[in-house]
Length: 260
Length: 260
Image (cartoon, rainbow over the protein chains, first blue to last red):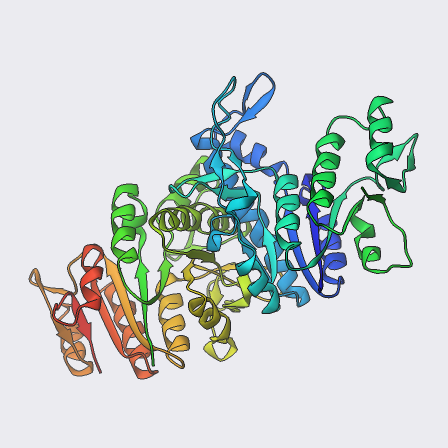
């Protein structure tokens, strides 16, 4: 099996053009097959405000109404995705920007309304996904750059969490490739008293949760990581943007390695 | 050689959701390999205004400055392109939205500054284009949906005329396919005293120009058409959005056929 690196980047790097380009140079240096999944960044909120669309929150949760959906389509698929693709092309990486609607790579379902109506938000059922088209793109030497949007098959785009897209694509592609999933973010890894925890297993995770060392946004990241490992992904690493290049060198240990 | 239909649609149909969806159903009904090239529509101007970016004109020509480029990237590649792709997917057409930066399908050059600095506007040299990736997409059953944006290979996206993109892609693909290029717009064809001119040749074109029957925006469309025919494109038709389905039926004559 060939190795496939799937790297997910979040908002912090996208909001800073210089850091984004510096990261993309690092990403460019990763040899072999690779996929980049990006988040949204803060510009969607800024552009919404300028257009007079105030963020809608219900019980502290963000709602994607019709107007907000248009803004995230514009910012994620139009601005962020194409800036990344144009810059990668300038380095010689043959990037192809995709949303879940393009070539139907990520069909999804509009989230069912229970206590909260989240609006145009997509939930993915991996059973509906097929790795063939992405695999053909990789074999053609293309580097998919995936925006955090899916579609419902009824003509609507859907706003979708980028961590979830990354882990879903990782599990999907693990049917064909030796997949290494990398969550790149602003810290050096998962931290305990300022020090990077070099490895987290199923067992130590339970303890870290209990002791309140892992909390907030790190919880879904780790839940996604274990979910991916349980479904065939070979390796999950949580590390700093700048350390992504070291991932492909077995002699360098960077960030936090998540294992079963 | 297999037949490939390349259909270009303009702003009028994009500005009206109902007409756009009606056209897309017609486009969906075209059998065999096909590519859709779309223009921008008026929403870029509206969204620019809402964001406080006033259209910049020099000698009556529109200028794409850095702020305007961001808006057209958002509207063309993010909003218009993805709405079209999601709707085509709902019909069962496996659309893939692309700009010139994606898979490097249309490298271009930022227009040289002479009397006017047009800003981030792309000129295409067909010698730099390669039909292989688009051809592989078509063979995979994908239907490319191309937004009017190219890139300069230096990290910048470029605003590019959609009629030019359509005729360039037509000439490029004519190396491999029997290409039929269709300019779909709001009229029934090229009109003379309200009647559709069923055929325009090199010779009749000169007369129609002289008599002032062909003028304004129709001139570059016809120049592009003859350019395409001179470079291997088999057929060029200028017709109404609703008549595109008839194109594939040899027994039905729709719109204006341009021939050498």
